[in-house]
Amino acid sequence: MPKANPRHPDFPIPGGPELRAKGWRQEALLRLLENVLSVGEDPDNLIVYAALGKAARNWPAHRAIVKALIEMDEDQTLIIQSGKPVGLLKTHAKAPLVIMANCNIVGQWAKAEVFYELQRKGLICWGGLTAGAWQYIGSQGVIQGTYEIFMRIAERRFGGDLSGRFVLTAGLGGMGGAQPLAGRMAGAAILCIDIDPERAKTRKQVGYLQEIAPDLDAALAMIDAAVKDKRALSVGLVGNAAEIYPEIARRGIVPDVVTDQTSAHDLVYGYVPKGMSIDQVKSLRDDGQGQLMAASRASIVEHVTAMLDFQRQGAEVFDNGNLIRTQAREGGVANAFDIPIFTEAYLRPLFARAIGPFRWMALSGEESDIARIDDLLLDMFPDNRIVTNWIRLAREHIPFEGLPARIAWLGHGERTALARRVNQLVASGELRGPVAFSRDHLDAGAMAHPNIMTERMKDGSDAIADWPLLDAMLLCSSMADLVVVHSGGGGYAGYMTSCGVTVVADGTPDADERLDHALTNDTSLGVIRYADAGYDESFEEIAAKGIGHVKV
Ligand code: NAD
Figure 1 (cartoon, rainbow, N blue to C red):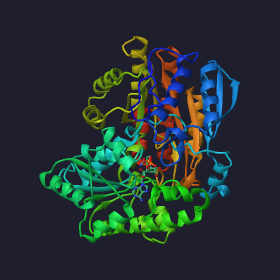
Figure 2 (figure 1 turned 90 degrees about the horizontal axis):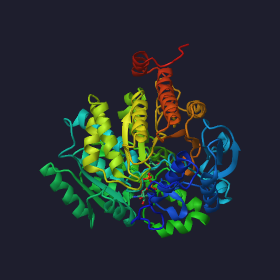
Figure 3 (figure 1 turned 30 degrees about the vertical axis):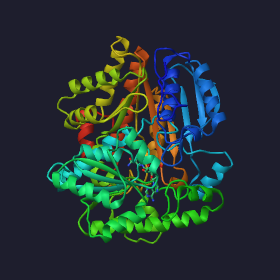
């Protein structure tokens, strides 16, 4: 039975033992599509997160996808082009059930303005990373990444944790909403600015944010008290980051850590310029696009200038993957890239071993299934400090949104081993239903994004998008259930290409074979990608785990 969804009553949370489709694989993908809307930011408009990341092109396309998933046989493949189903073809039972290509625009045309025009004509939609691929699990999807960044900073600069430290950030949307909880888990007093009071309320309602301050004075007083007591605390404040960051700087306050996760990548549908209300922004989207882009960029210039100011005064400042430096540089801030990107600054040694944001969703809708898998992880990887620390923290702190799910940064071999064990637990009936395995697109072999994932690669291969394309082809050959190639839309147009994958553990021997091939080959390619770029960690991983790397 689906469960009521207090946040979006028209979008119940899927679950229960009854199948509507002809098999669990098809049913699983249908539930994942329902799930991304149930935890999305604006499901009435099919928007899941990141300003414009959509689950389907439009409602007729959505209805056609649902119908196809319900009616299709296991030996068919549904083909989706930018959120619209275009074919249901006979393949074979080991082929993917769904393949997708979303928002891939030919190079010279891959510009935000072209994207907006194609979108206006109904010809395209942006799938974000995990929205269009039905893999989004709410703010939990990025929380471990954000937490690991904070912990790397804590280890390098603050003696191991962030207690007694002030973290300043902005953006309480779908992904940015992970920041207050990640900051609190790292021990910090974290202040999160968002222009939209509804976003702040939502994050409080779902348990990711503790307090909402009435104004900046009150917010700073709350942070100051928590810093003095070395007490972890998350505080939200409604306001424009382009005003509040400079104001904090003007008062002579220097936070210990500064970042930002507003939707700065999109100057029309994402970032809200200083001095404008959300309604004013909406009214300019169709007819005043140029004005809106100029105003957003001018505000981002002020926003990033304040971040650089904090950096000069000793704060640890980083870009959290929203293209804010790129927008600022185009607005004239020549040194915007003095701010490092989080991937290169903190996480690259993990990606070089293909350790990244793996996740699983309990299709039964039962939280007990996730608890059982948490136990399994602790049993299987007792010596993996990142995993054991994370699972203990996640159990204590992370509330479930939508289908119960868990994320954990696992690497080559670990992902496959876990998924195959889970498949056995599904087969034996120890779990209440099948489990879907997936990962973020921000993963070792899966993404080319020269201003986020692949910035300053050792060999200069930042902009080469062959890797995610190879990954997608490999995953189709490796029997994954859903394989997708996404490129950037809106402000990300021309900036990135990524590959996504989902495999369903339905307890069958076929699922065991799929999980083994798809997950092993996915991380193999990830390690190979970094070995090809010359990372020592990757060569160690290849030698230790016998990965089939061809060295030329
Ligand atoms: P979202 O659109 O759901 O939320 C963005 C939030 O920013 C909104 O709540 C909006 O009100 C707020 N905002 C916009 N302009 C503002 C301003 N001037 N001042 C204060 N608040 C403002 O987006 P999201 O899903 O939270 O993603 C945020 C950004 O992070 C996007 O650019 C996205 O692409 C990026 N992202 C990064 C990672 C990563 O791995 N680091 C992962 C996912 C998304």
